[in-house]
Image (cartoon, rainbow, N blue to C red):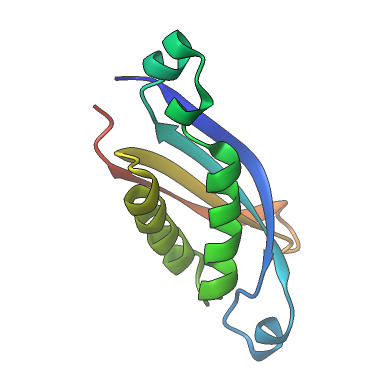
Length: 119
């Protein structure tokens, strides 16, 4: 299967960082998700219940990061990937988390991971 559901540029405000001052504020993270999903069933039935609910996924991303409040982007990515795979039955996903402004000379820094099997 090569079908995907995409969520790109999801902005989430959360506590993240290793410095003491970072633990006292929220910072914006930008999340991109590419999630393997068989779109043939919802396409053939036109039934939203058969589709991957990207609004629910987006909401879960925000609530998970708000609950976790990790120090590292790597921790956020690993935990978030596992959470989404388990809760939504996503077999494979590519997840990018960017932290704009973390390095003044760069637009953003971040991590990208892939987890699971695409087919």
